[in-house]
Image (cartoon, rainbow, N blue to C red; front, side, top):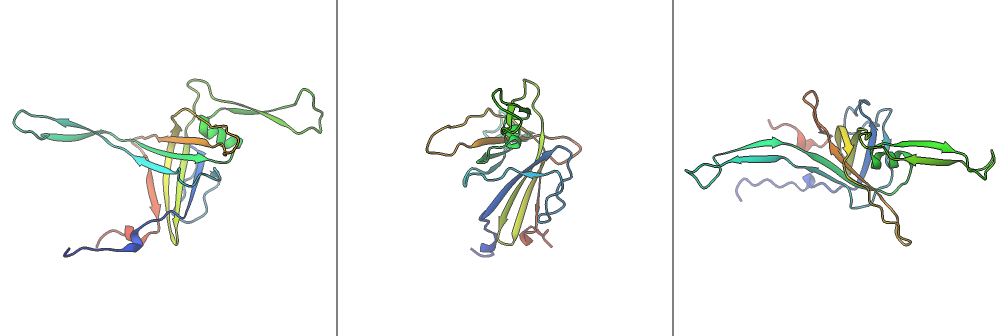
Length: 198
């Protein structure tokens, strides 16, 4: 085609991905490559093919008798979600997957002061889910991309397979929350293909 522009360097292959979480209000990363600010923690290992970022707007259409096509289409809402399966079990990851909850240290009834500590995780009660900030990092060679999500909440139930011959993953399903004063989500990148057109 005349005028067709092809550039294979603009194909992104996510060679490395990371998911970071932090309390809402924690300083967000300033760019695509500097170390994550204090307060963020990595969820650790995730399955190879589970990480997805979905952005789904909703629309309404006005129909009129004078046309077979919509007379007008307007957007009514927007939504975005992050999906990833966590391979590492930890207190922080359980709290992320269950939307909060508490972790307390307990002493085994048959233990002594030198016995290993035991811990109790209790999921949040109805109405007690908490929001978290999220950051999805994608690295392809020298190109880095960070999806920054200032407010998210775990919005789905948790189903875990507990099978003998397979690792049991924690399904993290975050729904982006919005507000008029901030961007619901945004992307930071050092990819030169994102430079504004002249």
